[in-house]
Image 1 (cartoon, one colour):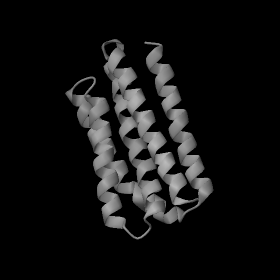
Image 2: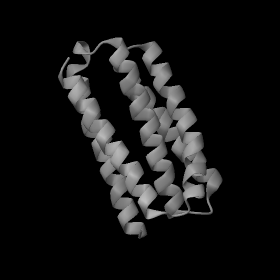
Image 3: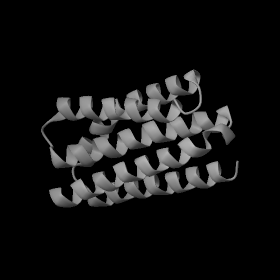
Image 4: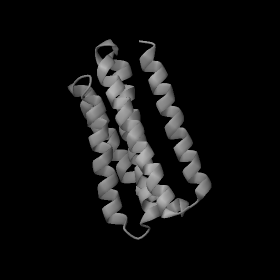
Length: 139
């Protein structure tokens, strides 16, 4: 898959994260802490994995930089989503983003630019966020 396509996929993921955050920000008072924990875990962890895999596909020999970047992004997104609810949820999202961010470049390096694997990871990412939005809407 070309670098331009990978950049567009990453941009689309960032847009999805942003739109989901803005939607959840509006209804955060209606969401319980259990669902908030799951949201923070899902957002931080899945974004870190998808970002790490995409970036390692784009820059295959930059393991240290990609690991640092995917870890920081996962921690930031997990803490951002967790911060919508309470401090414990913020910490859970932060730690899940940390762990997934550390693992993501390793997973991407082992997959070695397999397009089918990237499609699977993206599909899981999109379906997870669709389920997240439906779950939050029902509260």
